[in-house]
Image (cartoon, rainbow, N blue to C red):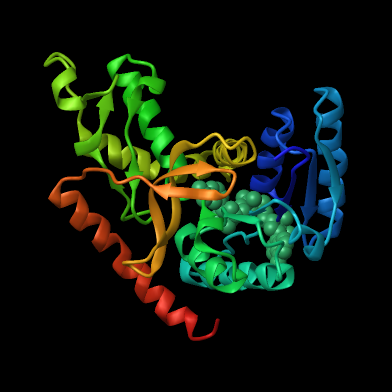
Length: 308
Ligand SMILES: NC(=O)c1ccc[n+]([C@@H]2O[C@H](COP(=O)([O-])OP(=O)(O)OC[C@H]3O[C@@H](n4cnc5c(N)ncnc54)[C@H](O)[C@@H]3O)[C@@H](O)[C@H]2O)c1
């Protein structure tokens, strides 16, 4: 995809961190910023243009409106709202639903081959919503899903067993958040099933690692208020796989026809978006946990879709 254009809708902390990572890697020819806060948007354009100049990036940054964003090759939705004191997390979910609906409606109709990448939370619900509203094919609407959780867990395991994270295959799957599932039964180190290759001298507590991974975002938020850099780097990696047609495998939220909603399973990612889902041989418990993880999501989709 030479000369590709990527739009970032919502250039707060996460949008700016994603832009920073994209610029540093020169993934797009042009990066378009959209935000309802026009002052913030224009400030980010100037600040991130300086990044492009200072690292000789081939990416040029500019402000744009929703319509221009809808004509880009990739649209990254990082628009969202902060949690206000005294409100429930459900209030925040409804506000983010409204934000993503406003943005997707305003960008429709999209260029026919646009790929829409949803990052705003809750990511599986909002990816399902974006798919329905955008009228794009399911292969072109994806969510960052459990990709960050998977790389986190790989890194944490790598530290414990003293093997490079690159040599570990381990996926966190299902609906991102409380009910996400670690596919321990399919984990490999150097292509060898994890049970067969770890010596008895290296005990790993799987439940503890999975739980630490699940709580990692909260611990970062408690410490510094937001988690922009990890997810920003994931956005850059997803865009790079698409722009350069890398066909790499990542756990990404996408539409599951048999469940009627979006959640994460590994996919082959390329220039057309989701090239195909990779079937992971899970054990029975993990299959059941993944199916269970979709129940609350489906109920929420049914509830809010009355107003979509
Ligand atoms: N998927 C993940 O792993 C992950 C990780 C971190 C954050 N997030 C989510 O990403 C989103 C952004 O987080 P943040 O820390 O950058 O928040 P932020 O408040 O710093 O930025 C949000 C930006 O969205 C803009 N915005 C609001 N409504 C808009 C609209 N209709 N159109 C365009 N822009 C709009 C705001 O003006 C603001 O600049 C949140 O939903 C957050 O929960 C997801």
